[in-house]
Length: 181
Ligand SMILES: [Zn+2]
Image 1 (cartoon, rainbow, N blue to C red):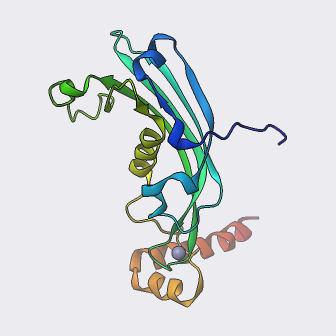
Image 2: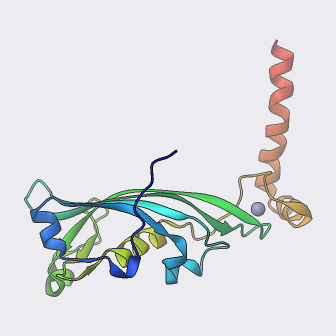
């Protein structure tokens, strides 16, 4: 736990993305959540940071790629009970670098193809990471069944028939186990 990661001010992380690929360069560090202007709107708290690694690479066809890994925990608001919910971010993606003018022609919506991002000599790593995190956030965050907080949560559980049935099953399980032993 004594390993200290460099904290890079995110507004200063402008790099030449194709040079990253050429040199197979690795950028790694921790970025404070406070620095993410757009992401902050989706968060209940901005304490903490996200660990990231971005490395230049090429794919099987020698096309420039960025391999991106992001780890951390963000606090979202449960849409059922409106209380805080710790959401684990675990992103491992390969994104293709494409000349800005070729973005429309080169990139398809094919889910088997990697996503594309415009290559740039002043590539904003922070913005890139923020985009990846925003894409990974659930549209409707909520606690697991039965884990909502307070009366609002219970009422919401009762309103959702399926969830209530599942909770009932969960409480039934230990009894079944006991009867077997
Ligand atoms: Zn909840």
